[in-house]
Length: 81
Image 1 (cartoon, rainbow, N blue to C red):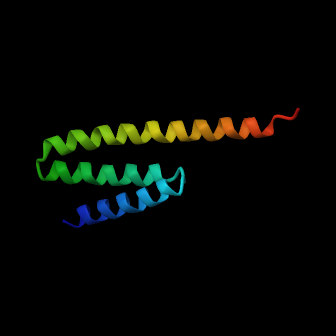
Image 2 (cartoon, rainbow, N blue to C red):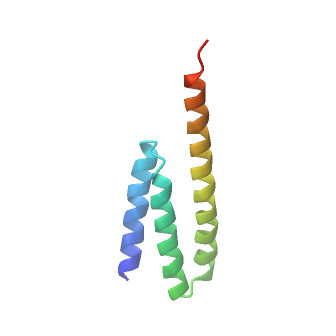
């Protein structure tokens, strides 16, 4: 199915941007995991469905942590002594 190739491509690009420390990698991971979720539902692969459901939750948490860290770093850099 075409959806699996698109999901794989999003995963690979997401890893590349993750290596580059770009926070938008999490959106690619969310898109990829959502596509894998849909694919696994259509093919009745329940373990993979559960796994990608958890991955989507982890993606939101990762995005939250990265944004929080970025905000703290910006505030620390703006402190004048």
